[in-house]
Length: 62
Image 1 (cartoon, rainbow, N blue to C red):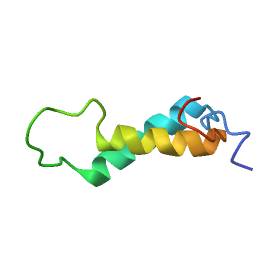
Image 2 (image 1 turned 90 degrees about the vertical axis):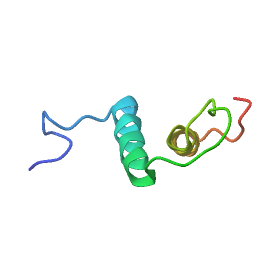
Image 3 (image 1 turned 180 degrees about the vertical axis):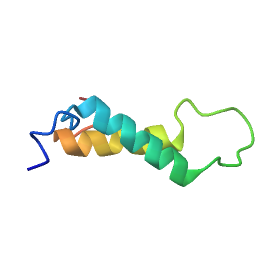
Image 4 (image 1 turned 120 degrees about the horizontal axis):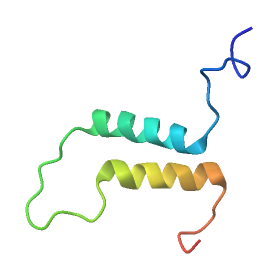
């Protein structure tokens, strides 16, 4: 049976978030913006929000 016992399957949160970031970044594409570049890209912000929800962190202060 493949799955969790498969040696190629990882359950590392960093790996999951990296793959999620790449998928979101590819999906969003390159936004057209004027002015100063943002400190976080849209893909980074969405990945952080999803990580916050997955880890059960209720506020941005944490």
